[in-house]
Length: 130
View 1 (cartoon, one colour):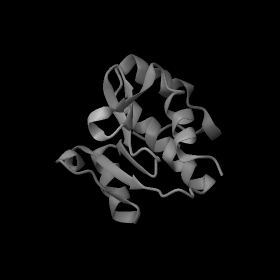
View 2 (cartoon, one colour; view 1 turned 30 degrees about the vertical axis):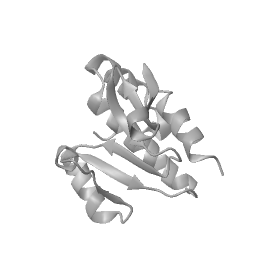
View 3 (cartoon, one colour; view 1 turned 135 degrees about the vertical axis):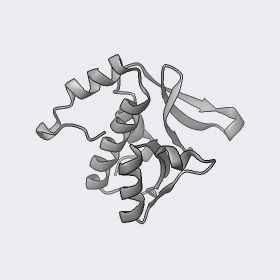
View 4 (cartoon, rainbow, N blue to C red; view 1 turned 90 degrees about the vertical axis):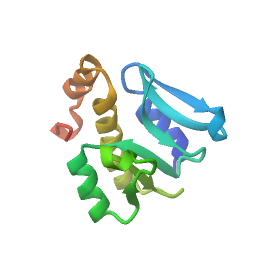
């Protein structure tokens, strides 16, 4: 089983101009950003991730997945959700997490960078939902 942070970094840092920034004011909690905008927040162990989805998708996921809740500080009303995934993440959940991370990226990245991700997304012949 791959360490959550290693896997999260592999997915997040594969995106155009993405970078990891650890926030000292938050006890070193990592964020993943594109051009200064966060698309993933997480705890140090990457057992809890926060990503942005469309408002409709966020509402649906919160309603159907027990490990997903709206983000605090009013961010939930803008589509941000918290994914409490734990330490032992099954491979099929990583597939879903990767899709949500890509979606989050495309919602916060400049259009030119988001388009690169949309155009390059050929995983299984599927297009990203956004």
